[in-house]
Length: 333
Image (spheres, rainbow, N blue to C red):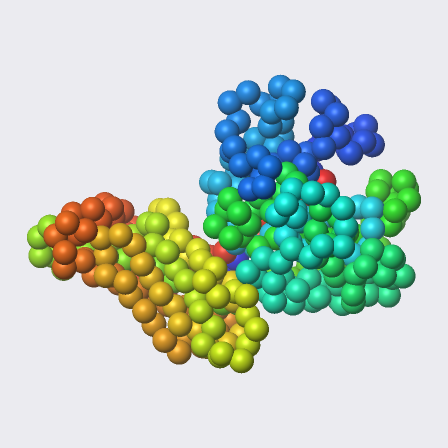
């Protein structure tokens, strides 16, 4: 009752119909997304032209930007393994064997392992050691480095969205386009794994940030605040946790945020120009449900910075009962 789930059957209908990886223009759409290493231009002003974003990519990019998903899963054929980001090497080179971790390494590994060990075909399969995978999971760049993939796009361009790719069919041609009679078995293999993976959407912290409606005159009225940076630092110095200093921002239109985290104790900092930084310590995160953290920021005492505070958007929902909760997007290439 508190999760919105979006399913995209395929973003490449022409390629699927033709049994080809590329679209009607012969472009591999999973190499066509904006990329921080090789092509960070997010414009889609000439979709479909050679060397430009394809129309399918542009539609998906626009949709993701509008929805601001928090957790995603991409279904793919061609192997039996779960691949997690990051997918591209920082030096822009291809090849295999070089691990490129994101700040969410522990979270990505845990979510990937949950899927792999629940999916019978992946758990009991013999393919994953061929790719250098362990326990059915592998870092994308270590498997083979790619650029322009949807998985890294979601992370770098969509508020640190967490995505994982599920390779759920074998290498042979028939495995990528299985006959209808085989589909019930694919469903049985993946059903429980999908449900358990989706539960990760409710781990970490979530909340709404508000502030006075005016920083130039006294007021008791508050409104939601967009663009607040939310940083969660693990308080246990003995934990090798690369999630330190990874951040999300509060989103339109309600000033809400969602930060997926592994269980632990965190110091959470909320900051935005024109407002006093607000820090909470000893915020406990468990592995059952997200910790709700609502925060009100105060205007900065410095008139110069207070004047620069962004205009807040009036709240149209109650703070306490229900947030606009996180979403899962699943796409089949």
